[in-house]
Length: 267
Image (cartoon, rainbow, N blue to C red; front, side, top):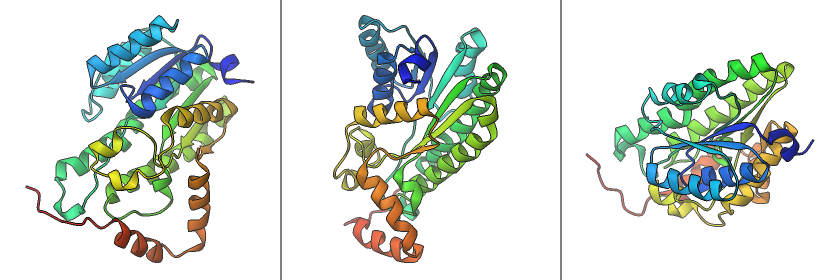
């Protein structure tokens, strides 16, 4: 059954929808007839995207929330499922990273990655998944990364959070398959977005894949019930290749290639 047949008329919640892959998810789901709940912390961008999608014929709702705040998932739930909207599709897309030597980076930035990339994903999924199980219908997509297949020095926390996301998705997928709820881990490589600028990690941006292509493949995989999707050929190759090399060797090579040219202390 195609994505359009499965998703038409159903409410889809997309986190981190104000830009990048999140906005691409919203556009892609709209082409399949889904109704959209868009959430992010930047109200102006959310409303601009919602206006464009509404003009194109999609039904939209916006919820401004910052997932760095532990109260935000409940706020999103209360404004949607808690208000009577049956959310059948949950796209856990919001995330952030930070490039640089861990011992010099702002501690709060490292902790924010854990809160947004891991804690918020768990909180949101725990809120919305039970109703999907009750209805015997639902789709959950969790954005991991090709960074989840090996440690990556200088984005150590980010890569570790994405391992969590991928394993969390795989475990959940096995748990809820008998209830006809599908869970997919999306593992993109470098993707065209502002992520690299915000994370100060432009060196990892080489060969970035268009966000809309990543979203297209992810939505198709979610509809088919695939548990892992790696949208780029390069990502599929590297994730396969690293199985044959010792982790110590991989991290040694990456450390030399990724080491910042100049390290400065951070308050």
